[in-house]
Image 1 (tube, rainbow, N blue to C red):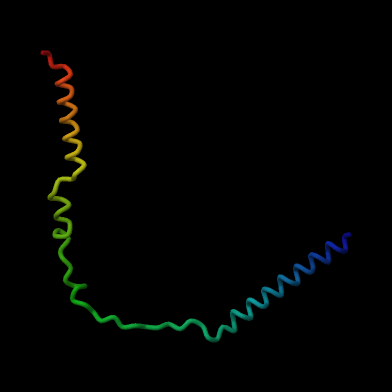
Image 2 (cartoon, rainbow, N blue to C red):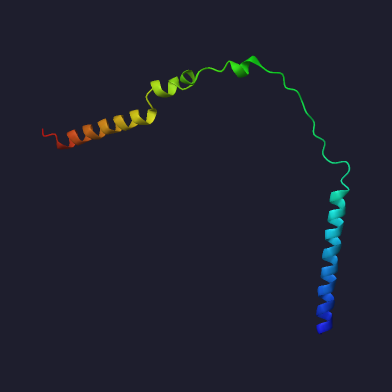
Length: 89
């Protein structure tokens, strides 16, 4: 029984060393490896003529945000409902 376990362990050890050796051999013999290809991209005037930051974000700071207007109208509706509830006829 003990001999079989040792035989199995030695078999796995041998197979592991064999696979490590195969992997190292393939790694070193990678003769056709990846080639780096350099491509020239001509410069464009558009890269340097960007609009200023204030022009890009002007709309964001000048216009009121929609959710603020929604809260204000909700508050007005709530106040009207409260006034109508306590209104005495």
